[in-house]
Image (cartoon, rainbow, N blue to C red):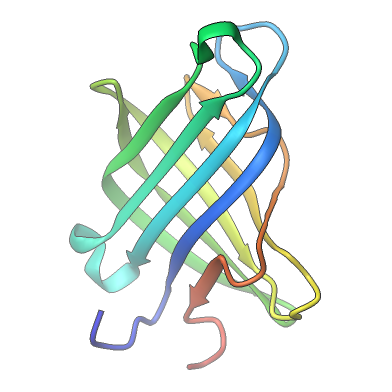
Length: 147
């Protein structure tokens, strides 16, 4: 982004074979999640965030969707020991319908530990249900290290 970001997150991550929930549906649906984010608290208008879910369980993959944030309203960075947790809130679209969302990304500093998407909830539509492990380095938190 050129300048230092006091609080934000860069995400390019995939988590496979997750059991997720959809509002109004019984049980869970298994599938793959792809997270993309480039978010900074000082440049919310220029920030971006998306989630793609690929249904790998249902015939016809009927639960697959793409969520794209159209407004990011808040970014909060919190240090957790050596790690950094970044909570992003706002609204976004799925098939032209707007929903509020909250995503919590955890950047684990130890190279032996995977990074984690702690939670991703699209209110009234989707819940990741539990933490989703992603590759180490797939989440880069900005602003927790006094950098």
